[in-house]
Amino acid sequence: MSGLGALIKRNTKLYFKDKGMFFTSLITPMILLVLYVTFLSNVYEDSFRSALEAAGAVVSDELIRGCVGGQLVSSLLAVSCVTVAFCSNLLMVQDKISGARKDLTIAPVKKSTIAMGYYLANLLTTLLIAFAAAGVCLGYLAYTGWYLTAGDVAALLLDVALLVLFGTALSSCVIFPLSTSGQASAVGTIISAGYGFICGAYMPISNFSEGLQKALSLLPGTYGTSLLRNHAMRGVFEEMKQLGFPEEAVESMRDGVDCNLYFFGDKVDLSTMYMVLIASIAVFILLYVAMNVFSDKKAG
Image (cartoon, rainbow, N blue to C red; front, side, top):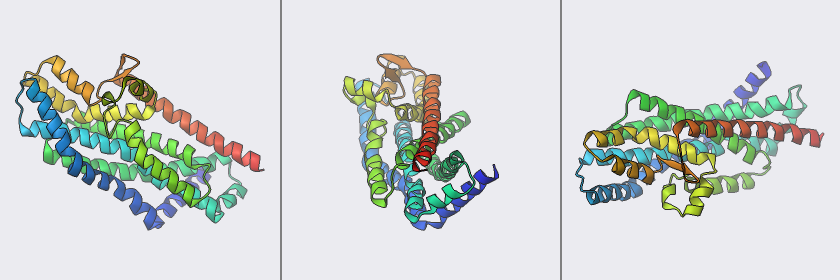
């Protein structure tokens, strides 16, 4: 345990010492928030307003902004929890380039301990940035339209923690085989550009074709996004019901923003979403540790 603690401390210090890596990770959620607010908030607001007017409903601007804010915030956190993990996990590649990885494997420490040292250090740094981003997002919701309860906030933070666990495990598996900065940069660019689409953050999965919806329902990140959507927007939909909105209209809106997900036609409840996400985390962690152990044995 002392060896693991020393590795976590060492990796965390190196991460914060590299100002370029730290600020790149930190600035990513802020850039996404600015881009979402600047380019997507009006689009989402017009979409919600048109849908409500078509249903003959009249709601306050605050409720509309609260609905849009919940969708924007859940989108940003769904993407950031994974993409930031890829940025902060570059230390693993840098150690291979500098030769520090070889020094660690020579030390009397189990290979699985070295692997978990990288994973837990990356987890801590990514959690720090993700919770900071969540705090900014909650501040944005307080400004635009606050419909969250204390339970919603707690559930939202739990979703963030689970998605960081997932993003860290996924990034560890993807980045581990890489050995150059060019490879790491290329993978980071691909993930940053594509993950938001395949997890339903940039565009709701309900807008895709039926075949693509079924394919994306197999990906665990999709359920992480839906969990964030449910907890960020629950209060808004509850307010709509209290205002007399028909249940069918509210469910239709929930379908439209992926609060309701369907696996080959069957609705997926929240407990199942949590089970899928937690199981995926466990699988990727075990895969990552196995990759480390097998790689070192092969090299030996």
